[in-house]
Length: 120
Image (cartoon, rainbow, N blue to C red; front, top):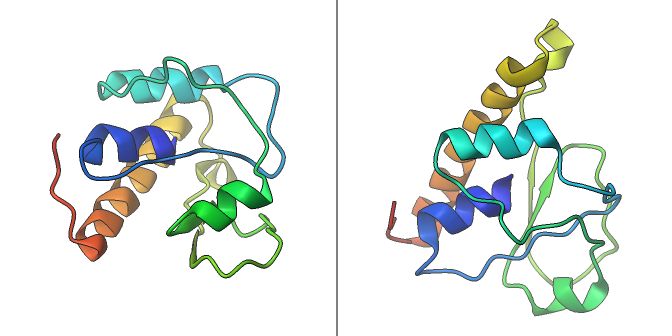
């Protein structure tokens, strides 16, 4: 979700790669739908594992969630501990929209930190 939102907002300014420490077998359908609601496309995306070469080539790695672990690297890391609406009993698309909006705000903040200009 973060990679898709970053590409949507800053496609002309950054290269974005997405990989997971425990990738699933398919994209989450509710996540795809929530992204589509804001015009963000997941076309061509699929879950894939993170690898050391990808991390080493990156200028910055963003980890989503407090439970995510990544082997040490010299690459700078930001950890985003996002809101989890299900802890408050919020499920389904309402949950996914809240998660999307939280991540979108973090993407915008990161773009500002990096001095990027939004194309969206």
